[in-house]
Each structure stands twice: as structure tokens, then as C-alpha cells.
Image (cartoon, rainbow, N blue to C red; front, side, top):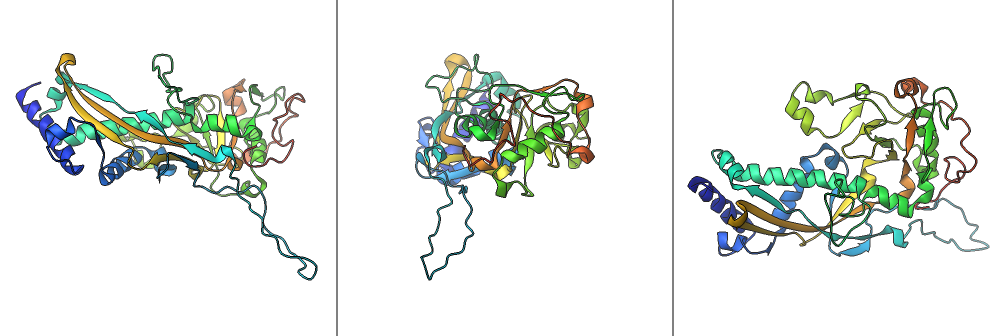
Length: 375
């Protein structure tokens, strides 16, 4: 590390120690410490603002307990009634679901990073050196959270990035929570959904599939105006998608904007392609039905100079959980098989196309019964 870079690195550690209320300056930052609440909140805000998708969901819900009941309140029954009080008493109903599937557990996630000396030397001429380093780390944490949310299937004691490049073993994500806790909101679990324009499949187009899958939502949610369809790359070809108009021709903005709006709607609902969403799958819900809980005072950090490996190492961890607030507000369809992507995608005028009769051996077919939240 060059002398000027060394000075900037020491300044980074001193600044980190100061904003976290540590005495001892750079030496204190070299020991593990609990990130101060204000600093943790600022980091969470940076992570949220780095991603269009994270800014739309509940991406930083602070909780005090590591394990507890989800904060969002879902309903499993109606409330309206009338009682003849001359012959009986009014009996208020509890519409909420406090079952085990609505409990969360914040598990420790390590966001450790390393910056080689040559890379630091290359950036040392920039006066905003500290901001560049911290922002880059925060943005990657945001991308990792999105990847875990859509692909995580377990919280393994020992993770393996080579075997799980989509971070499947870091934490249990939203889609896996639906698979485990909301079978009736999971269309065609373990089987494929065939879309064929000639009528030989389960549905003639994606509009028909979405229109039918929408019936898996609780009845009182089906006409919500904030419902959206989240999709993966495999469903709609890039030519059917466009960037949000404000990105214009600015390549940097296009790359940064990680949520793309489709110029077609599916089943009458606005459609969004989000990063790291499984290919050939879709989720009908609202953005605010997806949450990331972060346990207060659980963020730990340690900044270490590791000359044996010619790099700076930043050890950082936080306890977090990926939460579906209300399973009754979800309809998840995966293993969608499109025969001809161009011929099966209709414009918004065809979103009421009726589905063909689905296979009789599929108990999870949409529209066969009215579901309750969480299955």
C-alpha cells in the first residue's frame, strides 16, 4: 500500500471510529465493535436508495427481538356482521393469523469484503475515497439481499458460494417462505405450467395464466389497485421491456436501475422484471407485502489491515430476516413453460383471455377453491 493510500485508510478508520462513538480512533476500528444506531440507519438508507426494488418494498424494518411475530397484519376472515342483541351479544372476531408461519427469525448474515492494495492505490487519488469504498460495499449488500430474497432456501451453518452462486444457503427468502407456508398460494407446485398459443397447453398466453392465478389471492385482495406481477427474464423477451423513461440513454443510470417496467401488462396487472428473480416464474403481490427485518443493534464491524494477503478486510455482519407479511396477498407460479414466447404474449387488450382446462391431477390449480392466507 502506497503511503498516501495508507494515510487515507487510517483516515477511514478514524472517521469510522468517530461516527460510531469509539475512543481510540483507528485502533478501535481494528477491533470488532457494534455499529452505532445512527450509523447503522444511515447505512441501511444507503442500501435502500441504491436499489429501485429495495426502495419499493419494506427493506429495512427494525425489530428489537431476534425471533418474534411479523409486524404486518394479514387477515384470514371478514369482519362485517350484525347481531340481534335482544337474543345475544356481539362477538368480535380476530381476523389476524398468529400461527407459526407468521413468525420471523433474524439470522446472522456476514457481509465481509476485501479490497486489494493495488485497487486501493488506484483509487487513492480521489478525494471522496472513503465514500467510494463505503458506497460500493453498501450497494453490493443491497444486491445480495435481493438475490437471497428470491433464491434463498435455507440458512446453512456453513455456506458455500461455489455450490450456491445465487446465495441459496444464506437465508430463507420470500419465495421459499411461500413454498413452505402457503401451498394454496403456490400454483402447480413441483410441476410445469404449459402455455401454448394453439390451446394444447394449460393456458393460451401469460395473460390467461395471470388472470387465473389472481384467484389464489384472498377474495378481499383481488381488486387491490397496488397489485403487481414480478417476473424473471425467462418469461418476457427484452424487446418487450423498456427502462423507466427518466433513465434515458444514460448507460450508467440504466445499469443502476435494477427494476425494469414492462410496456405490457399481464392479466390486467402492471408487470415488473426484477433482478435475480427465478426465470420462468412470476409472483402476484404488492411491493409492501415483502419485507426485510433487521434486528436493532445487531450490526457488527471490524476493519483490518491484512498485509499477509495484501488487502484490507472489512468484516461486517447483521441479523436479518426475509418476511412475507401476508401469504393471502400472494400468488406464486413457477416452472412456466412457454412454447413460443412471441406468439403467446398478448397486449393489454387481451388480458381477459380464458384459460384452457388445466390438468385434473393438479390439486393446486388456480380457481379450484378459495384459499385462506397462508394455506
